[in-house]
Length: 408
Image (cartoon, rainbow, N blue to C red; front, side, top):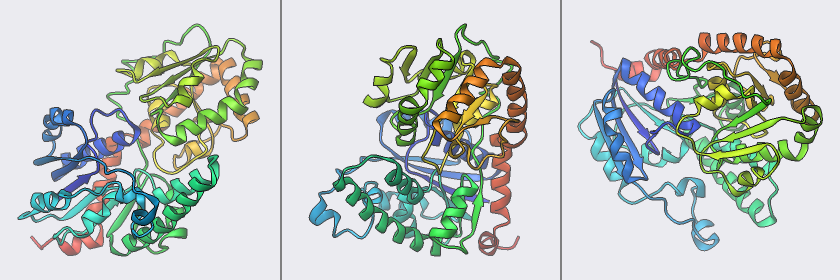
């Protein structure tokens, strides 16, 4: 098949959770099909990575992009039918550039990432079926933010207004899309309940690059002190909220049980609230690091104290893939076929979460067992080559695509 891939960013270097999914699926599709790639590009440095994508893409274009300013409440925002989180990706010239890129090509399908691109893809003059890959379901994500974050009345009002418009756009898009690809069954359940019960939805979880996160090349070398890792983008709301929840409600119990515990917070762009945790005894905030794998080696385990779900669970698949045991909330591990006590430990209340951390830090045989069983499950199920093959098979058998492809 011949595919057009359209992304709202250049997913390289692979230093954000969503970039792992987007880049690796593009590479796997490119290994199996002829692929053209069109990306919005917010950085002049993106041009340096053109050759990376040309290894598996026939044609590549990075179109310069700058987000417009956030609109004023009145009249711009209130009179705009699209949600502000989508109009923030609107820029004059993008539609014309995308149309030119696709002109004269006969695509079997168009694969694009996230709802923010739908206004462009909806009007693209191509007969190819359109499939949206959701790195997260924004409607679910924003509803959970509204439920979990402490917001003033004005922010709550603006978010409710955005959610109302977002729901309308989701339902309109669902009527026209050939299929939607989501990261987990919780995303599918939400979309069927809130958007369209009959929409074609394919669940494709996130995975790990087994060659990069290779246990044999990066075996565990744990620090002398019991060390807990939290790895992820530190300007991402669910990660910030999870750390705030942990330190406000669970860390004191862990300190009481393991007084010499150390915590490594590793990830790019730490928000002020995250940097502040580095002032606590035994806590280190690194910011962006050139390679996260040595931190997985140093850690006795990784914690995933997430309360806002939907989207990626990459820190779990990568952690288990490289052999670092995991303690997570149920929401943090949603969508992954991982069982409590067999592949990882789960805890949802602060007391249970702290107890799971303390138990795993104190029990080396348990860490070894979870390391072996968790890694085995991830390598059997959640590697990008396996997931890419599943996506390619789904596309090959999708009725809308089979109707579009002319007979041989």
